[in-house]
Image 1 (cartoon, one colour):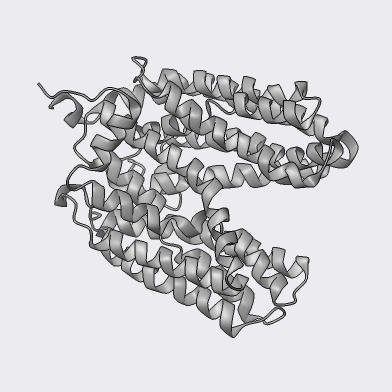
Image 2 (cartoon, rainbow, N blue to C red):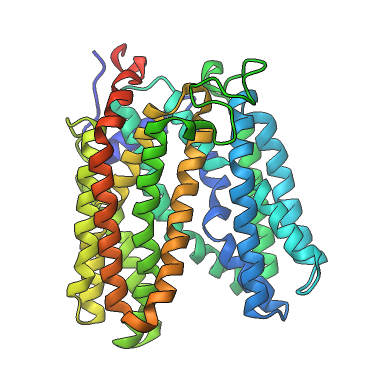
Length: 422
């Protein structure tokens, strides 16, 4: 009988150093560096070139539009043809498009927004690619949950660390040079991930001729692909709703800090949000829950909702930082459970696309929350926006509990067979 290492750190070390896992896991980290800082980098670039905030916002928004339009189609190609060709093309095309945007365009040129869209489309799909590999690799159930907890922790680290890396690069050069450097690093990571060997049976599937366009009832094919499945649609809806409070709080936190002190403290307060989530995963993720993931997930979303309400009690920057640190404890665990559910609910031939739709759901929810926060800020103030975030999080928990039976029926059938064979 195979022994299982105790403690999350030991389990992560055992998993991430294993043969045929270490290579793709670490190359995927490199390829994901641009994901969490590129929108900010583009704003800084356009402003450095003399453009207005309106022009900077347009370029950044069009980059996001390109990513939203292209990523499901690119992910579908990976599911059908394997990852190598797609990662090679995007690993070359992405830095090429951004390099051209930096050095061959300027604000007001039609080519600058066009290249922003192209760069968004060409973004290497490292997130979805690695998460689908975790779902296909022959792992025990506890190892797969550890892998998705690693993914959630990595997201928190990159959200905090990638902008710091950008700031460090800008100390020795311009925003344009920093953007170019990061895009090239990301492209190298994608190419490295493309050439890293994994077991042949987990490297994507080839579609049956004639089924790719019309769909076959399994969630493959059709315009929406995996979202043709009711359980997957329900899960992505919960993910989008859960991201709305995050967008609302993104606006409310700096406004609250501004009202209660100096704007210079905003970064430190934000950091408490991410640090609390990471510590929560390390603390609560030390032992795997015996509760099925479709039952655990709505409970975690409810815990997230309760945590979202804590900033309503804040009266100063210090108490807000404490509320964010405590309230964010479940966030990484919610994210890890979401990934586990995607791996169970999605058709095995559309896993990469399913993870892509899941990521887009959170992007859309976050964007809607930020838009709503901007509209509510003047009439309601930061405390009113915090209240709206609490209400939105409770709504997400309600939907999660309502859909747990739907997700549970499919998850019970789709438990990976390897889990019981090792």
